[in-house]
Figure (cartoon, rainbow, N blue to C red):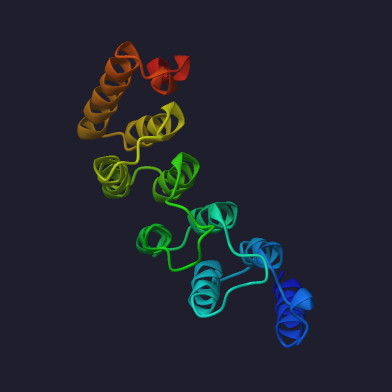
Length: 197
């Protein structure tokens, strides 16, 4: 995998050195590089270094939310210790608009990837609570595109903590979903699995 990474990085560097803009890397090139990083060691560090570089240069085809969904997925699946901080940084950068006009505010799928990443360590109550705070802050700021998928991730993660506090909070979140669905939010319809968790 590291041999593949070295080849991919060499190819990107070669493309970046091209004077003709149409031969320079675009969002698809960088997305592929992020996917390669996900198969290597130190994947989060490599992805964050790439984002830091991209803050200062605009690819031929500007980055968009699809690129960042891959970034969030890669970070979340890395299993590394600094996942939470980096996921929160990426979401904040998306909110700031520093990556161009095509990067909109994080949508429900971006938050789903973030929640999944934060809860990827079963049994970590602090990480699950951090994921819930992330959703709460986003909703308070006007992001209302959340659906039952994000909340199902939270419920499953709270149950997986095997703590009385986690079980209680899972039940409370299910009640929130039921109330929102009853008030007309069809995106929050509880799933059968929510009652089996």
